Amino acid sequence: MSGDRDRRPIGDLLDEAEQDLQELDPADTVVALRAVWQAFCVVGAAGELLSVCANPDTYPALWVNAEPVLSTAVRTVESAPSLKATFSTETNAAGGPDDRLNDKAAHELHRRILNVAVAIHEYLPKVNEHARREGDRRVCRQATVLAGELIDVYEGRLRSFLNPWRTSFGPGTIRISGQGRSRQPSATKNTSKRRKKKRKR
Image (cartoon, rainbow, N blue to C red):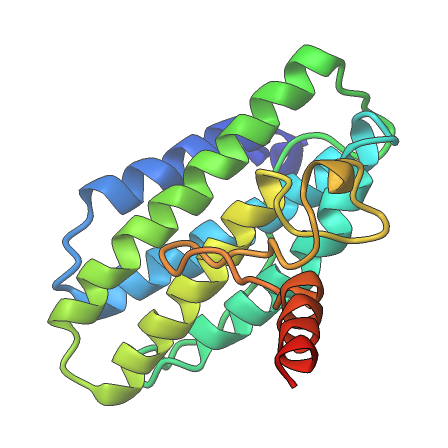
């Protein structure tokens, strides 16, 4: 019974993670990276819950894209030299596979996941500025990129054959936040140039 009382709504855990990233001192590298690690874990729990309990035509596809990003992000932060403690990835959130989320609740959870991902992305560069060890700075840079990819996932920008929003984005539109969109070379332009050269000959 006490275990059930200790369980908290996943929305509250997301809000807490976002608040920590807004308030904790980024100059305290150990505390800051631990908060980032916790935030990635909570987003993972929320994303999985969303994929299982919400609209099966929408959210499972997001989780297919998000899960490998989150797994890599958690392992990356754990590798920071300043973090020497043993990690536990258990997030004690209320809810389970038998619970269902209506469209309004699912949309709200989706929004909170995205808010935390944005908070991680904005917080890590500040941690990087203050970190004294190169290994910690490297972790910050890598995790910032992963947080950017996570934002893209939950904004529907990562293309996948499972992605229900894939028709809205053409080839080569996978974007890492802050680096602009990657672009595919235009085959039409290249062909046109070759034709012009032949005519001149």
